[in-house]
Amino acid sequence: MPGTYKVTEQVGHLMRKAYQRHLAIFQENASDPDLTAVQFTTLCALRDNGPSSQAELVKATAIDQATIRGIIERLKTRGLIKVTKDAEDGRKVIMSLLPAGEAVLDDMYPRAFRISELTVANLNPAERMAFTYLLQKIIDG
Image (cartoon, rainbow, N blue to C red; front, top):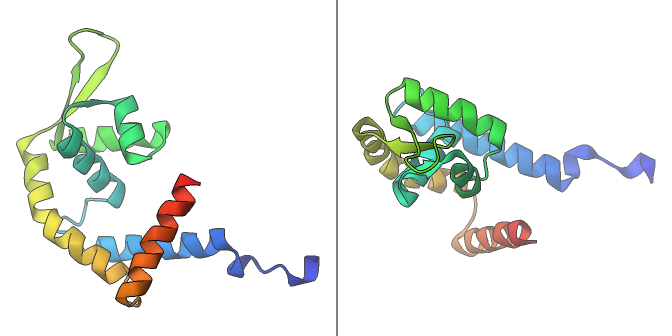
């Protein structure tokens, strides 16, 4: 029924609002005010997986191809990662974490736990577990 549909009560809208809240908490609590959540995710993927191609970063981070290009450029400009040609395929570029990127992660990891905690602060332990389970179930869909 057209008269009863309220966009502000729909799952997509609520998820977007929750994500916006999480991003605000991230920015307020990051050790580096210039570090965005997607840049942090990209640095984490490089630490977790080692040197990676752009396609591997897209897969590891769930960040789209167009966005990851800009993130790579900004992280490179800041001296947090290096970009080199693949030894076997000159068309392919490989991103690697530099010591400055490692240092940013070392500073951020304790804060990242706090950011996650603050994001779900209004939930009790059972709700937190259910929330995480349900998000994973939606993702696995």
